[in-house]
Length: 307
Picture 1 (cartoon, one colour):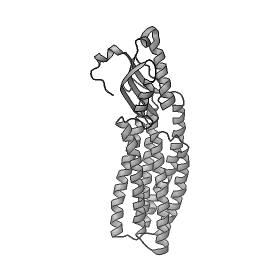
Picture 2 (cartoon, helix red, strand yellow):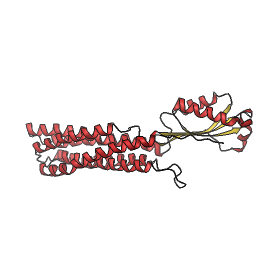
Picture 3 (spheres, rainbow, N blue to C red):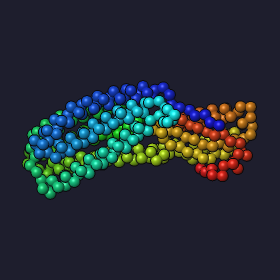
Picture 4 (cartoon, rainbow, N blue to C red):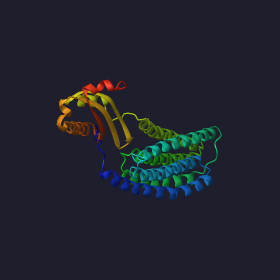
């Protein structure tokens, strides 16, 4: 017997507000990318081109995040019984892969330019970098007001913050070129961008992979959950205890609970379920839980039980 509990209420409202801030940040970034590409070609600056490529991934990350949030807001159907909430995790993973690819390509070109430096025009490079700092500060402010508990929104935020740091590094490289004519400052700044891309990529791929592979949420200690459940007077044993995350904001748990015969008499199972779900929601912030209550004699019918 089971009685799942679901998140209700504020999730959709929070998603709608977050989506508006993501659209605002996307508009700022798209308005800047075209100008930066043109200037990077004229200035022969790899650092600016690297920033433009990273900003393009920012735009893609934001657009993908907006689309994923729209999908995640769709109601459940017979085909998709949980809805499409996992779309946000897939978007975060895609953002991580994109950052990895961009970082690898820019890194290879930066190493080549370290060996054979090109002439870079420092003044237009500095001008665009400073404008980029302003644009990314605005985008960062917009995303900081979105709900960053979502891995999807967090991924978009990491993209933009990384690009902000990259522009600061590019501005420093431009100043070095203007004052010393040391051309290798440009590929060195590009390698800083690469390091930031790879770090941001890992910070997205690790948690999104953990969720997609049904890993136990970091906020849930299964041994502690088992101990709390077994402290209930009606509970004799716990098995097939599993915890996973449907999406970054929705940890879930299921278990088979062996209870006393008295607990299942006269409708007492409902009381046990209430106590179990109250325990999980208060101690572990798990509100989506499913339990199967079993009499002790039922154990012989589950030879494959584990956990």
